[in-house]
Image (tube, rainbow, N blue to C red; front, side, top):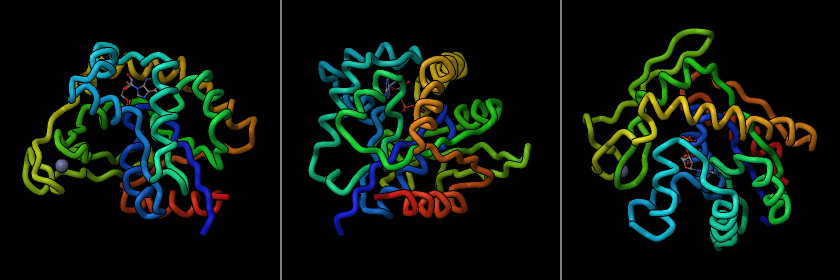
Length: 226
Ligand code: ADP
Ligand code: ZN
């Protein structure tokens, strides 16, 4: 099959982009490309790039466009992205979107939206595996027509997949969440109009947990792949 499937998952922090991309990607045979995961791995390894972005990430700011664009270019030209990819957390600014236009042909942008009070609750309750990046959440949401059950690990503090230690990201703390939401509203939300005008934006409002939402998302992706 010579199908190319180049997708962007757009949405504020905590909306579920990472969870959805990490589950939908493998089912379609395309990688989840998360610039946040790439940067966290660089910080962990103590590389030059990691040291450069560490402070910005901890403060909830955005890494400079030049740096992110270069990292992204390198990643999507790797062999496993030949059939396509799901971009999770990129682009986050208009210049990043313009750069992406020059190197890819995006089939669809999934605009994922949740009310801000739910985002804050979900981010505060998020835990990540230090070893493999698997995501967990102990928030239990049932209001505003949205019913999201908690996704706890089987054993407290321990990753189901690899047994690694679960931790709270430094930027998932209350003070930083506000900064990240502000960065999203100011710098990233203009991308909604940018892609709507191109006619490739699809709006998606999750109403339940990933077990129910991921199959719906996969259907949308299959419909819109080229
Ligand atoms: P979120 O949960 O906010 O979607 P990510 O894991 O996508 O978090 O990103 C974590 C941090 O990494 C961001 O707050 C930002 O500092 C940096 N980052 C990731 N992707 C980008 C990008 N495309 N442009 C600028 N900064 C980025
Ligand atoms: Zn793990």
